[in-house]
Image (cartoon, rainbow, N blue to C red; front, side, top):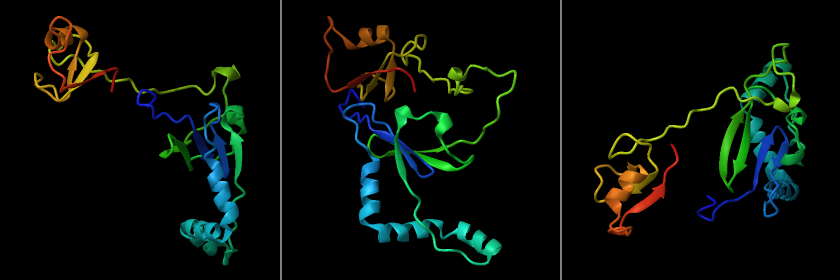
Amino acid sequence: MQKAGEHDPSGYFLIEDAFYNDLRDPSAIDYSKPVFDWLRNSKDEALKKWECIINGELQQKQKAILGTVSTSHLPHFRAFDMHTTWFRDLRFRLGAAYLYCHQGDCKHTIVIRDMRLIHQEDMQNRAAYPIVIFQLKPRTQKCSVCRIYRAKKVAVDNKWAQENPCYFCDYCYSLLHSVDGIPPYENCSVYDYLHD
């Protein structure tokens, strides 16, 4: 996104009734501000929407247990700076879905599904937490020509390639795509390749 000039440093987590805004970059935008403005200026509409959200299964369970259900109230939303908030400061429910939003409208659901108390065998240094217990291994492509070396370039719509997209190591790419250091044609898009 930075290379394309479309990087937006803004973002937030919405956990329970709190926005944790990423405002570290001076050009970052506080994404929670329009929500607060809407809540302030459209209280009736916001309350209607909130009632629709909680009107389903939760209200039926409350009715079964309590017999009657009181009218719902909007949560009291708050906003905090993400970079000054510690994980220990968060209030959350295990298994509940929360929201992470960045790049304007790229939204991800996050769920904290496990948590346990520290044991004697665990790392006792607080600074070491949170500990990553699993990380997906990046998958890399081999060169589509020699099938020996790791790919460094990927070409799209290459008229000399058998595959589209086609992956090349630096050596095979230079052999097939340059005559005295000049590319032989320009209708092919070539990008640096790191991993999938």
